[in-house]
Length: 289
Image (cartoon, rainbow, N blue to C red; front, side, top):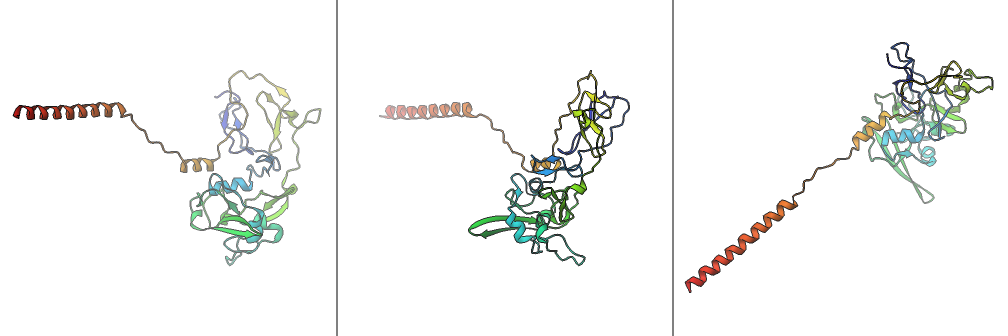
C-alpha cells in the first residue's frame, strides 16, 4: 500500500480537492470538492458543483487564449432578441427564445478576442461574430450555437449554470437567481473556538472536513507527524481544455546545422583553382610569344 498522504486523485480545478491515500487500504477516497459559494477565479466567481464557471474561463475554453467575456452591451443587444446571435435556449418547436431583461447575462455566452474560429470541435460549424457601434464605441460580440458531446460546455453555446450574473446572483437554467438556495447550509465540525475544521482544513460538499497534511480527525484538530515525503495539499491542476488549447498552439521548431566552416573551405578552394588557372593561361601565352 502507498503511504498515508500520497495523492491518488489530483484536483481537476480550483474548486475541486485532491484525494489522498489513507495508508490503510487500496481504495482512493470518494471524490469531493469545495462547497458551493466558495470564491474562485480571483474572486470573480463562485464554486458551483465542483467547478468555477466564470464568463472569462468559459470564453477561453471556446475561443482559445485571449478569449474573454464580451461587454455588457453584447448581452443586452443580442440575448434579448432571440436569434442565432443571442438567445436563452429554444422552445419545443426549436425556435430561439428571447431572454428577459434580468436574464440576458444567462443566455448565449457572448465573447470577444481570442481565436478567429472556435477551437472546440463542432462549435466551429455554427457561430457568429458581429461588431456593433454604440455612441461611437465599437464592441465585438462572438457567440456559438449547436450541440456538442461535452460535459464541460453547455449545448447551444449558453452560459453555464453557476456563472455570476450580479451580486450574490448566479445563472441556473438561463435564469438569474439568488445563490443562497444553492449553498448547503450544513456546517462542518468545529473546535472549541468555533473555527470550522479547526482552521486546519476546508469544508467539503459532504459537510466533512478536508484536512491539511499533518492534521486529522473529524474536525482536523489532531496533529500527526508526517514520516514519509508526500505531495503537499497545495492544489495544482491543469485544465483539460487548456491541454487541448496548448496542443493546437504548440510551438514548432526547426533544427539548423552550422555550415559556415564547410562553406569557407569550399570558397577558398574555388578561389585558388581560379587563380591557378589564370596563371597557367598567362604562362602558356608567354611561351607562344
